Image (cartoon, rainbow, N blue to C red; front, side, top):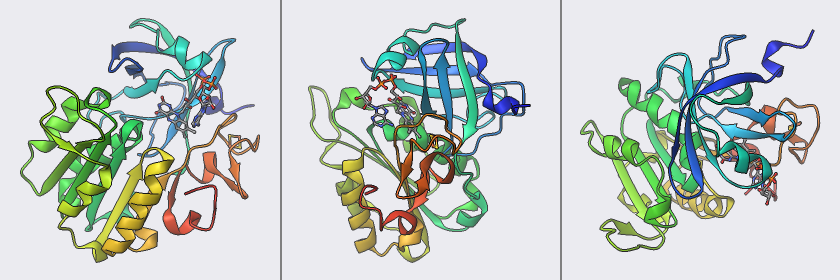
Length: 277
Ligand SMILES: Cc1cc2nc3c(=O)[nH]c(=O)nc-3n(C[C@H](O)[C@H](O)[C@H](O)COP(=O)(O)OP(=O)(O)OC[C@H]3O[C@@H](n4cnc5c(N)ncnc54)[C@H](O)[C@@H]3O)c2cc1C
Ligand code: FES
């Protein structure tokens, strides 16, 4: 019999909030057939019957800033499925299977400095890392959070950013936009300009990067120049996915199955893949 985790389950939309012109923020009831215990960096396959399926990163984990029994997604309109999904309203249903993807042992990062870097939609998969690090604040030393967006209008999760910025416990938040619009009083410039403010001991630090592929090359080069070890820089890779569980080969990149072995990798694991970074 097929494990229930493989069968899409109808999850009730509890909240559907437009964030920008393109994205919707969903709070959903978690799947109930099996315990739904995702780790930061994992994703679910979402679907509408007869339309299609797409991988979407989990943007909040049950019990970590969102109530037990619920989870969150941030979905950008990109094509046929996501156009329809982003029209869903509270009380309607989205089909979900998962969680899928590598479960990265959180213990290995304990006692170190953390640098968490998100560009654009990359803040969705990075948000559970940030939330967990702040919930387990005593497990880490200095925490730097760098958030970048193309314009102020595209800045996601503004309430989270404001609450992270208000902390005084050695949590340092930088926000920048590529181009300002009226009323923006914050920083302007690419995300790597924020790294200049990071006074972290890079010998004993881990960096996590989520964002558009173009950002990776610049961000990684700068982090390595700052002294980060290659296996201490982690990034998420995206490819088109179909099954999400290592069967169809759609997400394969030089023998790596992104859906199962990733989407989170250390730079050392993928630096030899031309396609990756
Ligand atoms: C592991 C993973 C996590 C993701 N997390 C999120 C998320 O949290 N929020 C979110 O909005 N989107 C996320 N995506 C992207 C999302 O899966 C695609 O936007 C979605 O599949 C588009 O489906 P569609 O049927 O609406 O559009 P389609 O008609 O299939 O595609 C529309 C356009 O999007 C492009 N596209 C499709 N898939 C991808 C992809 N993986 N990467 C880049 N471009 C793509 C297509 O080439 C096409 O140009 C994630 C993708 C992966 C692989
Ligand atoms: S999506 Fe099918 S093998 Fe990865």
